[in-house]
Length: 99
Length: 223
Image: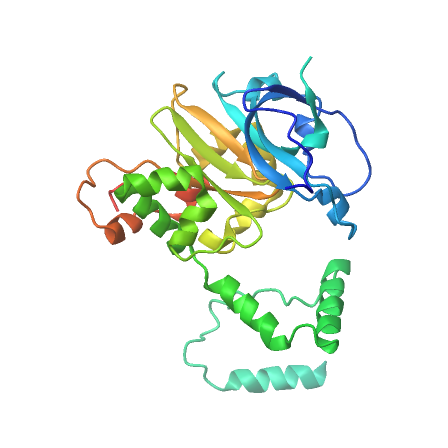
């Protein structure tokens, strides 16, 4: 897959979702921006939907990850069990290594 | 007004058989609001594609018919096979797309991820951004799946949502929510109910509801 960027993160890596709000079509929900989780798996590489939405090719393809967050990390007043989790698909350009 | 009333009175002078006028018929409001911007855009693009000979009206009709023909019975077949065949279950969890293709189900542009319920783990699927749903396996999503209430609450208070579906889980069970935000589609593989040893795949499939494959309920064998 020479048209794909190399994957920066391995399963288990701690990553933080960038806290940014560019205009346009985004597939990164607001509630995880700025939050830290762990890579659950690499899903493959996909054309960037932020480019596809405007009829651009979206290349090179972006690695797409499933990132697992603890619910308590997202919602300080979360009412469920401490081990409850949520997994979200996030493209690599939204992720940076957790500090 | 007078003419309308006359016609109306005339109609009702004739017996309708079932209609004694004590209980007015419930009526559904006519959908005669103005088209939204995107409805008008869909019609314009579709008509343009047909006018340019890129697709035909029959192609559109056939695609709609194929979409409407898919039902949760497809997903139930996949689950029943996984419950019956441990090697198939392994393949399904490792590569959902390839495993459902074995059963003649094509995932088209998206990839399937199957998430397995276990004694200490319950999975729930939502798409907070829109209504991504494994349509190739479950058909069209239910209205509640697309509602703002479900989409926001499933990630914020999943246990409360589950309770409203009659699914109360002890704190010892981890609730794992899957937000279907991009190119994956998710199917929950429920736990096989106790007391179903030796059942045929067809009999098992009848236990598997749409809601249990979204993860808001768990199948049981009392049905």
